[in-house]
Amino acid sequence: MRLFLAIEPDNGIKDELCFIQKRLQLQGVKGNFTPRENMHLTLAFIGEYNDPEFVSEVLESITFEPVRLVIDGFGCFGDIYWIGIGEDKGLETNVKRIRKAFADNDIPFDRKKFTPHMTLIRKMQYDKGIPSDTPFPAGMDVDHITLMRSDRGRSGMIYTALDEIPIT
Image 1: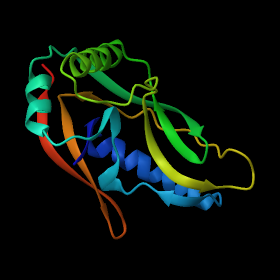
Image 2 (image 1 turned 180 degrees about the vertical axis):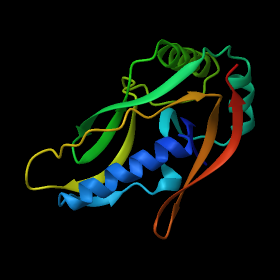
Image 3 (image 1 turned 30 degrees about the vertical axis):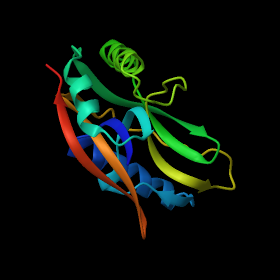
């Protein structure tokens, strides 16, 4: 099964992300817009791994720092358009602790540099360069992280929460 670890934004942040997507569509931006129910911040992409219970056990052994998630700025990875997350020491510390725990327990994960973001559009098409917008400074205190399963459905990816690990 395909697994990843994520923070799910609250309804206030999801509302703002949906408003941004609508404004981008009004500017003429096209592409595969992330559905509201799939909006998330990936902390670690595990990929194919068939023991989610072990992943949960490892995560429960980590002491997590408090995190305040605030949306901030935009960026692109090729044709993927995303909204950034403001700098947060707790977030950076937690990602380092997760990666160390995964490495120590032979749980595979994508080792690319962590760039905190939430994808808004995949396969973006816009003939005027990079679209611009100004996000409302929506934010939330994070009280848990979620171990997610990812499955390909008929009309896109389907994410299923397998476990919630509290951040105290």
